[in-house]
Image 1: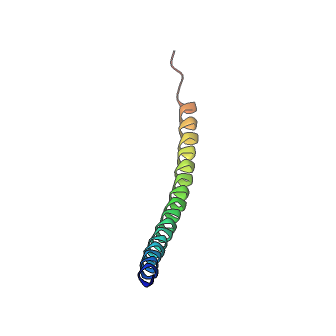
Image 2 (image 1 turned 60 degrees about the vertical axis):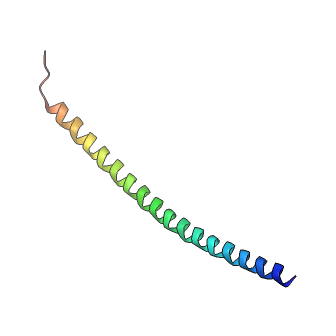
Image 3 (image 1 turned 180 degrees about the horizontal axis):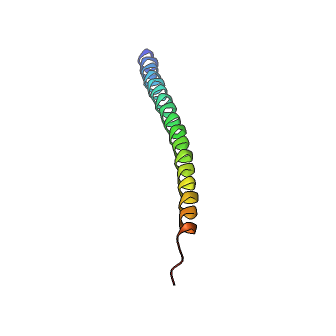
Length: 65
């Protein structure tokens, strides 16, 4: 019986260590996702700005017949 308890404690310790590792990895991934979402918004804004500028330049071009 004592061996069963020891084995269970060992498995529980392993489980808890793995659980903590996964929590830390999950936090890192959440931070990475947040950063990438911010970068995505910034890039979308730059694309929109470029689109507006390009459309303005195209309007200034003479029409071709």
